[in-house]
Image (tube, rainbow, N blue to C red):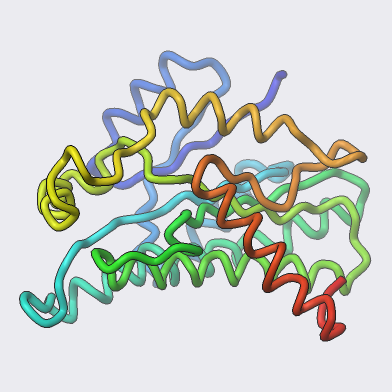
Length: 246
């Protein structure tokens, strides 16, 4: 497609990013710790200075901690780190790129802002007291950003919420055994979708565009898609009836 991709990642992933850049034509990378909030805006400006025609930003940050508040409460620093990674940083990254994407869209170039929430934004579970509300915050922020964009009348910028289900990744590697045990063991616990299956289903959903070729407002897979559907059937209908959105 002739597209250039700029991947970002933490310092600890530098070698992995460099290897990807060598193996994949058109891929460049930047080392960027999103939780370093003081440098966040300057890092975004540096990327835009190097890539002034950047038309799509995909914000896909997240960590997941498991704890039981009444048995093993976490340190405040751990909660703050999880909230910063999952919610504060993604919102600030979106702020840093929004005006650039909006200006391009106003000039007639289609642009996209994608943010990853989670099926747990719609179906909170007891194991993740901070992760679930942080991802619910991303889901709400994405919807509000889209509502505000509607007020401008701009049709060439898309704000998209990516809603994955429970996927077999390292996200919960540190506590999967414990959460399985809380569900009665691996034989009874909810099992993750294989990563390859998720990737295939994500791209299949991504290709199901709107009538004008724009990306859909939400790209959900599995339980994530069900959460989005329930929200549209219920809460969005209430918003529509209130006149706050159409």
